Length: 129
Image (cartoon, rainbow, N blue to C red; front, side, top):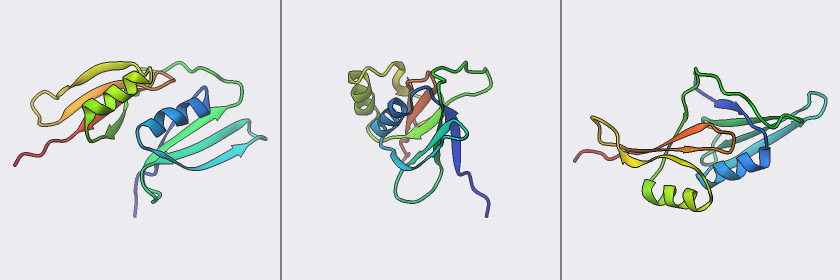
C-alpha cells in the first residue's frame, strides 16, 4: 500500500527547529547522523506510529537556505488554535496571520513561521452539526 511517509525540509540549526516543532506537539521519532555525508536527519511526527511526519535535514555548516517560490507551507491540525498561537507568540514565534475563519469554510486557520522562515499553517476544524 502506498502512503506519504514524510516531508523533508532543510534547516540551519537542527536543535532550534526540533524545539519549534515540539512546541506544536511533535516528538522526535528517530535521528540519523551521517558524518561521511556531512548531514544529520531528524524525523518528527505525532503519536507512536511511524505515520506521515517531517524530516528535518541539517547539512553541516549550512545555516541558511533560500526558499523557492514553489513551496507553499506545512499544514498542522491543532485544537485550541488561539491558545496555540498565544503560546507560540509568547515564545517569540512570528504569527503571520492571526487565527480567523477561512473564506467560505468552517475551519479556523493561522499562519506562523518556523525558525528557518518556512510558513506553517495551523488549522482547527469545526464540524457542522
